[in-house]
Amino acid sequence: MRQKLLIGNWKMNGAKSTLLDLMTGLKSGISSLTADIVVCPPFAYLDFVRTILGQSGIMLGAQTVSHQDNGAYTGEVSATMLNDLGCSYVLVGHSERRQYHHETDDVIAQQFVKAKKQSIIPVLCVGETQKEREAHLTEAVISAQIEAIMAVSDFRAAVIAYEPVWAIGTGLSATSKEVEAVHQFIRAKVSMQQSEVAKKLQILYGGSVKPSNAAEIFAMPNVDGGLIGGASLIATDFLSIGKSLK
Ligand code: PGA
Image (cartoon, rainbow, N blue to C red; front, side, top):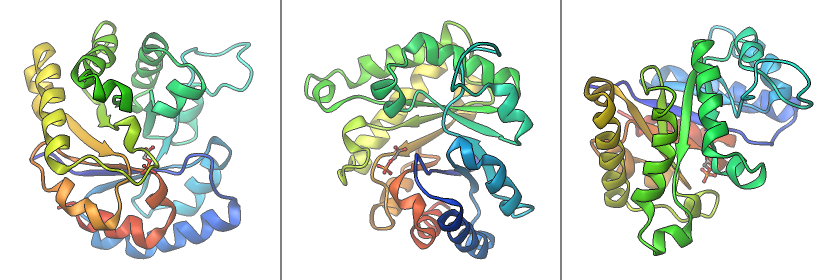
C-alpha cells in the first residue's frame, strides 16, 4: 500500500491575515486525516507558514525552484534556500510555470536534480493541453516530460502529479476512468526504468479536484493522492478532500 499524499498549491494567493485563517482551519481538522498533507505557499510566506504550522504535522512545500545553485539569477530561489526554510517538497514543471515562464523539460529536469540533491522531494507535474488531448497526444506528451527526467535522474524519493492542463482551474475534471488510464501509463513508463521504484511511486491527480469529485477519483487504484489548487484555499474544502483519501 502506498501512503496517500495531498498537496495544496496556494499559487499566488493570500496575505498574512487570510493565510493565518486558512492555517487555523487546517490545523483544527488535520488530526482526522490519514494522508500526508503538504501546503505550498508563495515563497514570500514560506517562513511565516512554517512558524504557524509548527508541530501540526502539515509539511511545507515550494511552488518551484531554481535550476541553478546560486549566483546572479535575480528573482530565483535555490534548493539550498528551500531546504534552509524547512521545505520537504517542491513542485517542478507546473503547467503555469511551463506556460508563463517558458520552463522547458530540460530546465525542469535540472530543477528536479537540484531538489533531490537537497533531499527535497520533487513533485514533477505532467499533463497535456486540450489541443494535445484532441490530437491523441496525451501519452506522447507525458512520455517526453518523464523521459527528460529519466535522462538525468530517477523517481526514487520523488512524486509525479498528472495534471491535464485543460482541467486546471477550469472546473472541468477528467473522469476517474481517464485519470486511472493515464496513471497506469505513467507507472508503466517509470517501470521501464526501475520497476521497484515505480511500484512505490506516489502518482497524484490534479485539475479541478473538489469535495464533490474527490472520492471517485481517489478510489482509483493508481491514484495515490491529489494536487489541489483552488479548493486548497478553503480549509473546509481541503479537509473534505483529504477525508476522501483513505
Ligand atoms: P485547480 O489547480 O485545483 O485549481 O484546478 C490544480 C493545480 O494547478 O495544481
